[in-house]
Image (cartoon, rainbow, N blue to C red; front, side):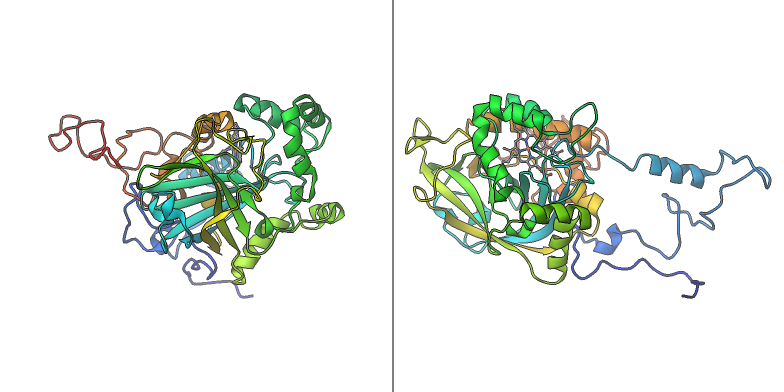
Length: 438
Ligand code: HEM
């Protein structure tokens, strides 16, 4: 191939790719085209846009050096490289994600006032699938629970449904979460085994904490090694509370049903895949979307009366180690999700996305499940470290598509502009939303 002698522009995204929607950090749409957000121009530049003539030779004092500290491009290039890793997620580090759309086509309206569940409403989504235990570079087909996290960018704020592919959890009280994760993660001395849930400290934990049996049996079943992210069910696990227009409440459990069916790998297949294609699930999802075979899931809920004791047919609805059989409470359809675009940049989108079970919209509320209560604390806490400060909701992939007027001020990477002062006559109820009733 001939060596290029004239400059060329950056290639556009491929046809199967889409980045985050073009909204500002305050949720308002911008007229900026996708090109404006991507690196551009015909020439290599510094981070501040000055054109570079050479990026292969550092500035030296004479032919044999030493290298000079005054070479700003050298220092900028090396400094940025030195800082290009961020902490991986403490759990669910290994993941793959895609953009898509959720269309409400069920009977959500009667039980929930959330606008994105109104018949025909279309809501952009970003969905991240993951393993729980492995490090970011681990193999996809390890035996493990899978994460199934969906961010709905609704007009009333962002709703995150942060679920798993198994309908129950190991523990009932969130205070044990560090213990179950430490038991299943690699041992602290040799840092092995990688990504494998079943080893001696894990067996110790699940034999001594009997509430873990139910999840362990699911984990050791075929569900522990899905064939593809496209062939997994998803579950909200906890019971949530829905509120309708008449302020009536119901208790629900969320379910995702894959239209591709539910399929698993054999143990031997998963072992081979780990060696031959450790990226099997990541590749499978991206290839399917690129080929136009968009995966689809129906979202539904099991609905229970919001009774004083929060029980249903003798089953404790606040206990995340229990399922409610679908024979007793069939899943009622709310809508369908289609994943139709791959990220344009893994790090900016899949790595930097931040889900939180507390990202709720009017009409959806949490319950007193003690596992859920601890999750409500944990996600934002870890994301402040993982994403380097408190303003990560302003990253393009995390920006709401609803207007943001949070009055949160300053901090690392603040990009919002807060224009009123505390004494402004335009904001007489300082500190309160202008309309507090939603
Ligand atoms: C008290 C119990 C739990 C605690 C303390 C906890 C904590 C965490 C933490 C710290 C993260 C990393 C978040 C990040 O860095 O952005 C995470 C990720 C995640 N958790 Fe939990 N978790 C708990 C239970 C659960 C349960 C029951 C589920 C499923 C219903 C679940 C599903 C997920 C998923 C899917 C992710 C990955 C989200 C993503 O793809 O970014 N977790 N969890």
